Amino acid sequence: MSPLPILNLPDSAADLVVKLLDFREKVKLCMSSKRSAKVVKRAKVKVNYINTHMEETSSHTFIYETELPGGNDLGAFFYSKKSEFLKSSERHYNREVVNPIQENISHARRLLETFEVKQLRYSVCVKNKKSEILKEYLTRVVAMDYDSIDFSGMMFYEEGNVPLDTEDLSLILETVKPDAGLRIHGTISSDFKHDNASSICIYSISLFDFQPFNFKSVHYMDGGWVTMDVLKSIRHSGRVEFMLTNFSCKDFNEYIHYWVNSKEDIIRDLSIGLERDFNERVLLDNLAFATCQCRYKTYHFIKAKNNENRKFTFAKVSYDNSRPYKVDFETDEPDVGLAAVIFKHLEDIEEIQKLSEVVEKIEELEMKCMEVLEGETSDTEKERIRNEMEIVVKTRNLIETRLDAIRSQWKNFLKNIYSGLLRVAGITDTTLRVTVTSPSYV
Image 1: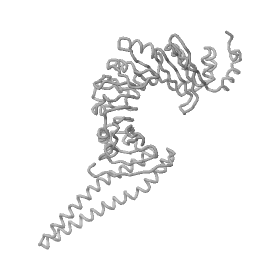
Image 2 (image 1 turned 135 degrees about the vertical axis):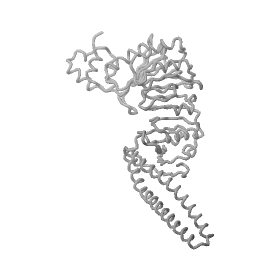
Image 3 (image 1 turned 90 degrees about the vertical axis):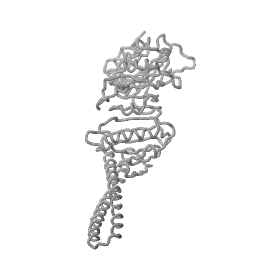
Image 4 (image 1 turned 120 degrees about the horizontal axis):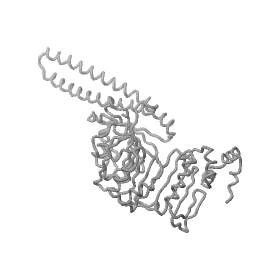
């Protein structure tokens, strides 16, 4: 077979031709031959990520230049038996091969060697792979270094939940490197437990040995096996996500209170799929918070009580208005940008709660003094009571002056948060509701 014309050009001319090609043409040229791949490699083309999926009968790899929707990408599908209905297109092509997995690995390796790839995302189908062959299968299939890996009990085109055997899942967790993101798609036994003592987390390691979360990020489609004790035991500096759980709004409210009162940082980013009976009032019961409502999303801002040994004391609880049962809980430092404005306001709310409680007690004391004064006959004792009441009234006035001073700052707070939201998020349809809970929270 005669070489491609570009390979007969001087390097400088070939480099110019490659520079003029669009992204998909560069990928196709790379896959034409090892020599053409070397020409493309000299261009140092940056790629956002590669997705590669492994199945025995059908494997594929997609390469994406950017994360933007509709951006440049190109896919290659490898089938052991290609259906007549499968047609290649501008965005992907199909090939019938003897060994789809090996062909896919070779294809992905060529791309990784040619382009400057930011991320390799792996996905592996483990359907019908039991423990006796699973280990060998994983060794053969996971043949390249990766940034994240996804295990599924379903074929690429299938829908629904497929059970993952506890022993098999434990083997998978032992196989995955700790500095990678992990995603598990499949139903997990409610009594599942796995000991994984090593941790890459920046927070202190939990006293619990039960730790199937010690990866860069964790996503479990089925979180029904996660109890409140397990949830509270998680110490993680990345993202932890459970798509489906048995937790209610009341349960998650308990977890938020646990975070508020904790003496250490426990988690940075948690996403929970709650039971469908969503109740915002129950979710936020007895919490001090500020709320920002946008057209499609609701945000609640909460601060931690203990600040001495904690860095991330500002929390954002958010959910889509169309499906509020999927709740995100993100924590951050309170002294950055818009977070600093809201955090200061939450501190004011706490102070108002405490001062309001004191005012209530002072008013009770005033009433008792008035009752005693009405029944007193001694002029000397009446004078003493009046002097005490004067001190009580002055104290109440001072506290109310302080409360007025705090509330007078809210106009600036509203202005700052509105301008911040408009600047940072580009939101033009935003309302803000500030909520102060009862003093019983303090």
